[in-house]
Image (cartoon, rainbow, N blue to C red):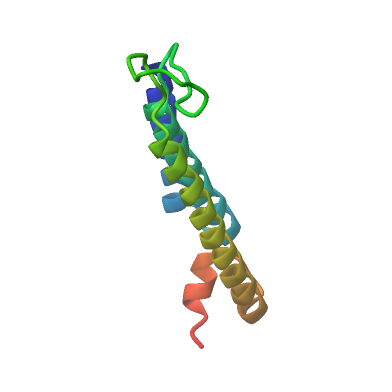
Amino acid sequence: MTLYLMTFFLFLVGLYGATTKRDIIKIILAIGIMGYSVNLFLILIAYRSGAIYPILTKSLGKELMVDPLPQALVLTAIVIELGITALLASLAIRIFEKYKTFDITQVRRLKG
């Protein structure tokens, strides 16, 4: 149970950083932290103490097994998150090239 709470706390740290920081790079890092916490939560849901891997066994299915579906979902989520991070980083670079700052409040003031 404490692992679930720690994952929720990690998500709240990312949410706090994404909503309160003014620097674009810090916002991108906070969004990454939120994504990592969601991935960790999905892996924790699939974990079963004392379970066996479904690929390495030839049993009849009576034993407790680890659920492989959340693991596959996390692999997909990692790839999507990498694409989102690359897109946000490229947008941050373009904003810096145009406005010469990473501060969002200054970018909002500089119309044009």
